[in-house]
Structures are given as C-alpha cells and as structure tokens.
Amino acid sequence: MKKPLILIFALIYTLQNMIGCYNSTQSFHNKDQFNKEYEEASNTPFGIHPETMTYTLGKMTGENNSNMPDGDTYENNAYTRYLKNKINIQNINAFEDIENNYNNMLNMAISENNIPDIMVVNDYSYLKLLIENDMIADLSDVYEKCASSRM
Image 1 (tube, rainbow, N blue to C red):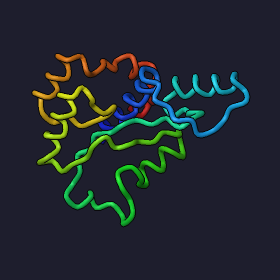
Image 2: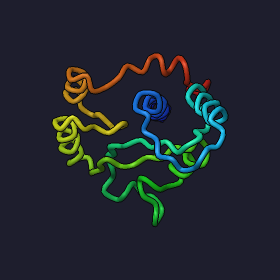
Image 3: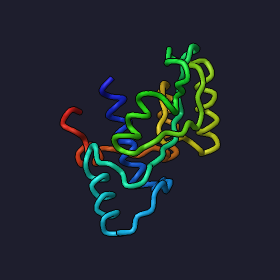
C-alpha cells in the first residue's frame, strides 16, 4: 500500500512542476503570497496548493466498483475528498475499466501518445514501451526533495 501512495504523491509533485496543470478556483490579490504558497506546496510533502491542481488518472477498476459506498465514484470518494480538503488536488479520470479491458485502454492511450498523468502499468511490455518512447520520467529527485518521513 505504501508504494502506490509514494508513487501517487511523487507523480503529483512532478506534474505540478513539469506540466503546470492547474485550474483556477480563486483569485489571489497578492502575487507574493500566491508564490510563497505555491513554493511551499511544491517543496513539502503535504503543502497546500493555492489553486486546485488537477491530474489525470488511468484507473483499473473492479467489477463491483471496488465496493465503494453508494454515490461514491473514483473521482469523488472519501480519499479524493480528503486530498482535495488537505492539499487541494483533484483527479480527473482519463479512463477506467475492469482489469480484462484495462490493457486495451492503456494500449490505445500509449499509441495515441495521450497517457494520463498517473496510471497502473501491470505488464512489463507496456513499461518498456513507455520508456522507449520517452513517455515517463525518472522521479528520483522528487523522492529526495519531497518525500515525507513516512515513505
């Protein structure tokens, strides 16, 4: 369970610095304050983002919606609400499918050069393809710079 959380936080950090995929949710009158909050969020494991940061997610789902409570979805559940409340990030599902069909969705995303920011890669051949096509990043520096003591 720790490795997926580490990967998620590392990828989120990388995304905010590499892609700049932000949606504005509030107006900041003080640019210096905004920059200070952004810098803190970018350099601490649990910094609160001054604007909601979104990231896309390729999700492998269970046939029974992973037994989530009624009304919860992969974009809106206890975990995503917690992250939105605590550090102001929100996922947007790029695609989701059950395990049998997930690899087809992943293959299509790779072939279209349109992969989500975070996704499960459960087959070495897909990992190799992503590396060969320079579609993933080395996150070593991110771990060193921004990993919490619990990782």
